[in-house]
Length: 473
Length: 92
Image 1 (tube, each protein chain N blue to C red):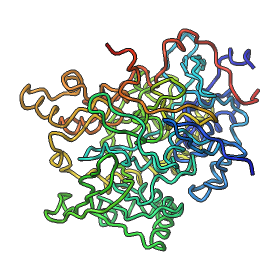
Image 2: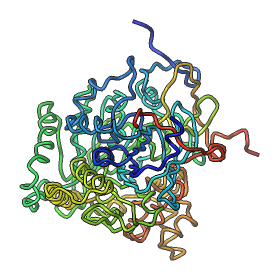
Image 3: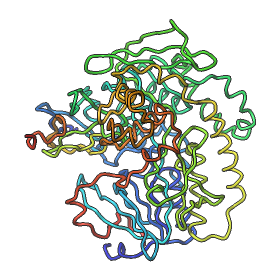
């Protein structure tokens, strides 16, 4: 096997979520020598996350009811047979060389840590996204989790995060999370969506072109209705409290302008709060390669791509959430286009282009209908943690701005250490940008991470060509 | 039926199903936190659950800073709460 790894792939895909799976399958089908590298144990990414296979473990069948469109997943995974698969390989950086690109990975199979390198002429980056968070008093208590984290426990491990769960934030993703919890035995005390149901009425054009997406949301809504789980719109979580873990959550109503209605506080006992405010694309690798970016409708920094998913860097394609958060269906289409073109195909099927256009329109309608409600910064007190890793309170950022007249991300890092800790601003980057009054394009310093996945110097010192774990030719 | 595998956490035995992460098994056992922060000594556990936030750092077989959400549980593993950096022995 080792000798095969010395070769240069035609197309290397980073990420095995919907976009990456579609990209690798399409590239391999088009005849390219294809590799796919992913941090997960099994392909699927976050959307199609599956348990690590073990005859005594959680079976795929046990979590099947949590999934949507498994037929597509199975078709794409079957298509990987023609590609070299590197699972539990974390890409920590990508560099260029004479023949194309060198993908530097940490092989974490079996709990180990071995640095290795893979070479490819072209790259398709499909790094996906993670839940966007905004701070509020008490959000650092154990039991306050991201909605995606709660979902990952269910889909990947068959574990229900808590007994009494409140789901809050904004966006259609809250519904499957709540439905999955309820169907797995948790008592869901309510879904608190900050957006207004009326917002979608302004987006009928996008909705009509995407009836399938509507059906997916409706199926989760039916589960919630059947179980009498209240779904509140224009409702926002303002605080969590408890001694050593979350015990209570306070929510408030929002008026039509997205401001909290004074006196509308309601406090509920919970042991888990699942919260998410849309998603933040993972841009470390595109930024490391110098790919051009733009700010999307939802305020996220995303990659610029052309009609064929090419980034501004020759030989680098980007697909999925990294070029605009839009969900699995859009990511799959973008991946198929990227894989086909990267493999050298002369043209892209018109149906793929049409499908992408309609799904992108839907994604933009979604972003406009589910904004992060303004005013959350006003609810922070000086001692509210903003950067969880470095334990930087809001007061430190406020006084930096007031006393030192410093308002940029670099100053925030240097003067308060916000964004300087373990997670390198992945969690607080969006919030710090908002607090400083900077849009994402001005705080890209919070998205640039030369080392995109941690590794020890010991592992780095023994770097060698990687061995893949699939019997591909 | 054979007995379920276990790992130890701060001296107690935590059962798990093969393929589950350390963090998932601890959550299923009702454990909410397994780290205290470096400055405030505050408890932390799973937050993002997917390897992004590093809040769930834990000591596994004497090695600190393992992400409990990513590290798969293994029988006989010794897991312990991470105090601060997990390198208390290096502090002066």
